[in-house]
Image 1 (cartoon, rainbow, N blue to C red):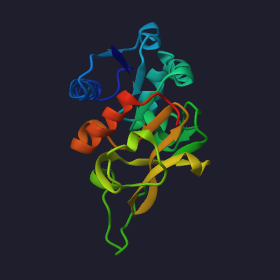
Image 2: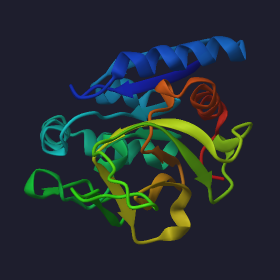
Image 3: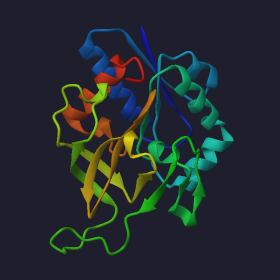
Image 4: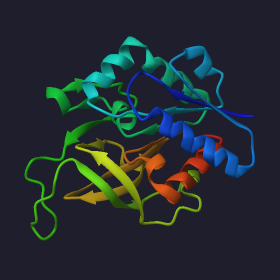
Length: 218
């Protein structure tokens, strides 16, 4: 039995993530139990943990702090694989510019920045914010979650803010939208994505399948 806990703090596309993980579990031919829960004991009993997030960071951090999700994630990272998605990735940082500035969990040294209102591409054409849709992800570092995921595959993004981290060795891929930004990062037992793997068709499902087989670290 491969037990996966999706942390429910009232923010995020929880059930689409859960269904995608259940699907890839069936493809692997193994018994996979996916629970969507805020319960710290149930999360602690899982083999793997997913930390999703959608929406404004202030609302997310309010619920994260109220439900003590930060401690739950910190405890999980010590012993098991953790996948953070979208705002879940941003919440790992020290600070976000969103909502006039919000303190985040501080598990990764770095901050979250706004793309800007005057974002342009290489030809000077104005780019819309939020960054929404499919974009190329260039792998910068080997990781088990990249198994069978071709470099420069396209993943699905929806965000107006991006992560900037101090330790570039943690960056596992980048994407370009006006500027180059961090698409994924890894630090020991945690792998974090700015894109939504559950919405990214075959390559996203492949990444989730790899997560179910990853033992943590490298």
